[in-house]
Length: 283
Image (cartoon, rainbow, N blue to C red; front, top):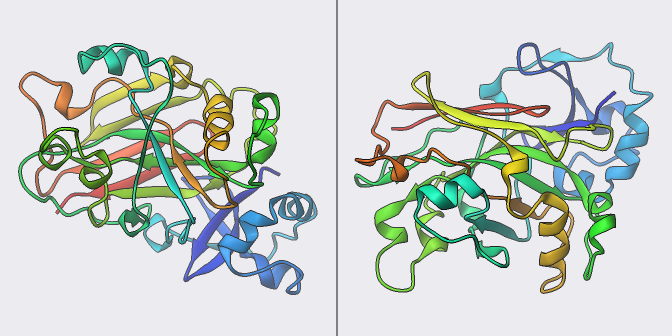
């Protein structure tokens, strides 16, 4: 079975089923404590989880709702994000294609759960659907051809942005504008993509109140998943559980004329093929 790891009440759980009928099995209990209950420790031992998942007894699985799921990566050591990483998005923002990945940081205190509320601060809060990489095996100077061996899996993400704060002053303050409380929901779980032949060309998009706003294939990325992991590792050391947002596709609210920003009561559903859906209400 495909390994998917969720966090519920601060404990790691295997996920059986999909978004329509998810069920969970406690990792530590199922393994008689041979595997840890801490989700961050599980990410560091991903190959062991992969092996155990193939023999998992699912008879004890219990149903779980999206609202019961915690952030699947609760304490990442580092959070990165890539700006302007889709060709069509760069065009809508009136920006040239970057020659290297445009990297900024997001702060860990902005993490949110797959169904967590997001507070609207001001009048320029925007949505950005994203594919999120979760590092499994860390390291430096990772060869691009081996990069997927260092990835535990993928999550669905929203890189919620306060555009007013982001573009206040020069240079822009990307890390601040994208790191308010709750501005980084990810989930619903970490999905192993080892056996997914389409992992470099997945469907990604989001709706706002049921209206489709973003709709793309991830092969529109300027820098693909393996390249991003390899490039980051040439500058910094990557650690198990690090979170990497890989950029948003065409259709952000800021790109509309006039812009279409979020308001209290809006609901954003973000879906990544092969992973699942997260749902966040703006309040």
